[in-house]
Length: 416
Image 1 (cartoon, rainbow, N blue to C red):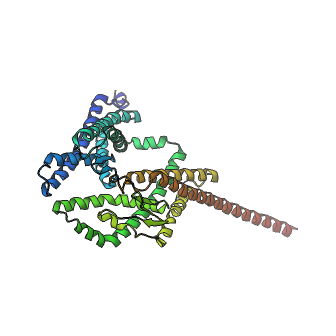
Image 2 (cartoon, helix red, strand yellow):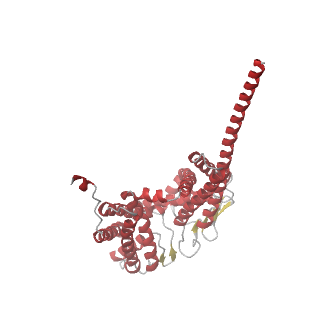
């Protein structure tokens, strides 16, 4: 009896209860995120001067519109479309969905990837439906967004963020990772290494530019004359925009650069833009003209990323053939380009329909160039590292053979 109870399989999860729990967690994540936006919007309305006809319901609905924007859903303003989202703002709903996914995993305890899919689909559909309702109903006439677009983006947003949290909490992330082919896993690791090197350079350049332009940013902040609460909101908004600047600096290092409006551009070939909006983080932009030594230094970064990626793959798979290592390096470049391209897409957008209809890097061109730069250099470095290793082994073996033959010959001569 003891042996039978010890070998009894774990009970199957109650899919109905687990699905309802997943829907409830999606609802909680949406309500908490929307509540944060509404609280900030109402506090700004109370403390800021406003017109008589602008009641608190306008502030609530406007905050709901910007909650939809935090999912990278474009909204329509009276001046045109707005799709430029501070990447830091997207981290708030992403973190809430990640926590919700972990909570569902603790309650439902999925044992297989199929179980996780059964919980993720109703959860994502619930979150997408809430996002579509808020986008279509809760926003004012001055802040409009398409419900179908909000539904699609909200579904993917929840599927990715909650899926990562659920997979990590249930332990299925390692299972899914092990199911991938070895070549895919190693090339993905190499791509992450290359992307981290590029982003680290972007962070360093952005930090240096922030330190240099900090006095000018403070003066611009004071020129806006915000009140106490408005100053806090503006400071948080500026901090949330810093990841965009890091990604733009990364795009600059690839040689493509980024756009600042329809006619403005910042790249190693030159910096040219007109009048910029009054926004303190934009003081980190370089002056117009030729960037000089900064451009030459930044163009070396993809090469460094490729070298480190090639060495990383060679150290992990030293016994592979050079052709295999070169192929893995090319795949790592593709992964790196995909990561940088997605981040560039998240950091770009439009501000109204006039001069700043296109702001940020062109994601597909930045991704392709990053993939080619990192992948080609990584392939050459991995191939050359392998060749030098075998040459060293061949020369060492040849020296040992010569010594052995010379010792045998000297022994024969002495015996005679």
